[in-house]
Structures are given as structure tokens and as C-alpha cells.
Image (cartoon, rainbow, N blue to C red):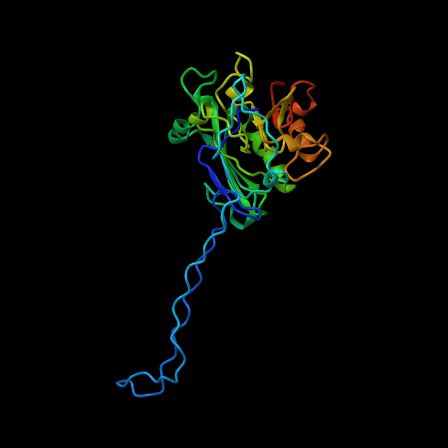
Length: 294
């Protein structure tokens, strides 16, 4: 996993399946003006004419039912957040996606691979002491299907050695309409933010040590990807990450966005030689795929 999942820029989630500000209601058009009276234009309006109408007030957007990243959790002695029951609104997670990049045209698959732009590198977790040089990383943009049934464009940083393989995997996920809630570059402030336990960002490069270890994570080399972390949590003893995702520990209750043994997501990563943390015994890292085996 890429670390304590959180959302840097909280996304407003609206019912029925609405995340990160989407689907705000448009104001109603102004009502038509009352027709003129049949009297002289210079005289007073006829009292028998229809009453004048006023423009309709703008519709009020529905109140948000969940705001991702808004509420920090109380901490455990080990520094992680308290593992709490999954809020009802998240037990069958289907939150829509905010479009940070223009969606693909015509709902078609599209992907780009290029060196990491300076502004993207600056907002990422990369720093000079990371175990991979910036020149050895690549910036990807890729189409994906959201839980809202719409196509979106996500972004990801990976090691240049695996860039083409990774776009191939996500092309397969796109063809299978496997839903992703979010795909964006992890930002540096997220590494030190208080855990909120409700993040669901599909991401790759994160310059940090492995969980509870001092060695670098495979994510720090751009050689691992976490997919829908909330739907596919990290589990070790009584620890569940994200901390509110405990309802997804039950893998028999199959819901969209979950990764299951032998499914198209597992097969697509296996085809490029990557391993799945869902096959591990302890921890079991259901979100995690890597080219290094760890």
C-alpha cells in the first residue's frame, strides 16, 4: 500500500453516488414574464390580466452526505488511526469522480507517457534523497471508468521501466469497465496528514518507507500500484488501512471496485509479471501490485 490513504483536496460527495463536488444542480431557468395586458401601452395594466410572475430561485444542491478527508481519526499508539466501523454511506462505495483533467473524448481509451513535468514533480512526494532519480520516472495519463458510470482521465507517476506495461494493464481495466474512484499523484503534505481512513486513490509512486519498516517501499521506486485502497484494504492483525474500510474485509460480499483472485485485474498484472498482495498471508495487502514482489 502507498501509505495512510487520504485526500489532500477533500472531495464533496453527494447522494446518490456523487463524490468530489460532481453533479451540482444547475439553477432553474427564469420563469417567463407575464404576458402584457390587452389595454393601451400607455395606460395602466388591466387588473383582469394574469398576475406577474418572478424568476424561480436557483435550486439548492443536495446536502453532502460524505466529505472525503474531512474528519481526522483518533490515533492508535502505533500512529495509525483507530479502526472504526464503516459508515453506512461507504459500505457499498460508489462515489463519483472529480475531473482534474479533461475526460477522454467519446468515452474512448487514451493514454500518454512522458517525463514528469516540473510542476507535477514539485507537487509529488519526490525529493533529492529518494531512491530513484526524477529522470527515471514517467508521468502517465490514462482513461478510466468511474463508479459514476462516466469516463475520466487520471494521472500517475511510475518508473520508466514499467510505464508501457502499466498503461497496458489499465487499458485492460478500461475495457472491462473496472471502476476506479480516483487516480491522481500523491502530494507531499499527505504523508504527514492525520489519517481520515476514507481515501480511495489509485496511485503508484510515493517516496516513503514500507509500512512499519525502515527500507524503501516498492512505491518509492515507482514499481508498485495500489488500486482502490478502500475497496481493497491492507489487513494485518487488528489493523485495517484505510481505517474505515473494515466492511471490505469481508471478501464474500462482492461489490464494484473489489479485486478478487483470478479476476481480470489480477490477470492483467500477472501478465506483466507483477505480484498481488492479496496472495500474501500477513499482511494481506489487497490493493497492492508490484514488480518486485514486495
